[in-house]
Length: 226
Image 1 (cartoon, rainbow, N blue to C red):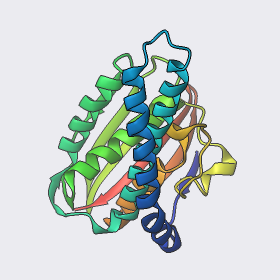
Image 2 (cartoon, rainbow, N blue to C red):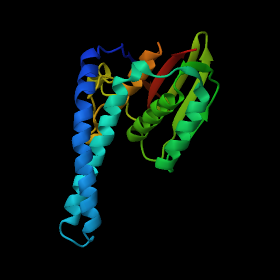
Image 3 (cartoon, one colour):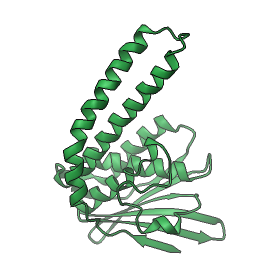
Image 4 (spheres, one colour):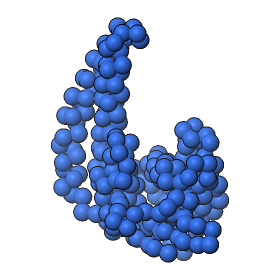
C-alpha cells in the first residue's frame, strides 16, 4: 500500500495573491458574463453568432465560479466554527452529489462524532472528494464513504476503484494549481481547498493506494479533531 500524508503547505504568498487579484478579475469576468448574456437574449438560436457568444458566456461564468473557489481557499483559516456533525455533512454532501451523478452509487457507513467547524464548508469538502472519486473511478462502480470515531476525533474514508494517484503527483497533490485534469473543472484548486480546511481544523489528509487481490483502490483518509 502506497501512502502519502500531505503536510500543511506554505500558502501565505498564494493567499495574498488570491486576495489581491481575485476581486478585480472577478469584476472583469462579471462584465463579460453580463454583456454576453444580454447578447444571447437578442440573438436567435439559428444566428451564426449564437454559438460563439454562448461559448464566451460559458467561459466567463466558469471563470467567475473558479475565482470564487480561489477566494474560498484564501479564507479557509477564518471559517466560522461551531459544533458540527461529521455524519450530517456526509449525508448532505451525498444528497447533493446524487443530483449531479445519479448513476454513481455511494455506499455510506456512519459512526462519526462532532467537530468545531463550519457545516457548509464541511459539506463542500466532502462534495469535492466525492467528485474526485467519481472522476477517478470506472463508470458505475461504487464510491464508499465511512466515518468512525477514534480517541481524539473522527476518521472519514472515501474510497474508489480508480487506478490510484500517480506517483509524480502524490507529494504535491494538495498544492494549489496542481492537477491531472484539464479545463476549469480541473484547475487544481479543489483539493487545495480541502487540505486548507482540514489543516485549519488541526486535522490531516492522507492518500493511499491499496493493491489487493480484487484490484487497486484509492482511499482518501481525513482525520478530524473533536
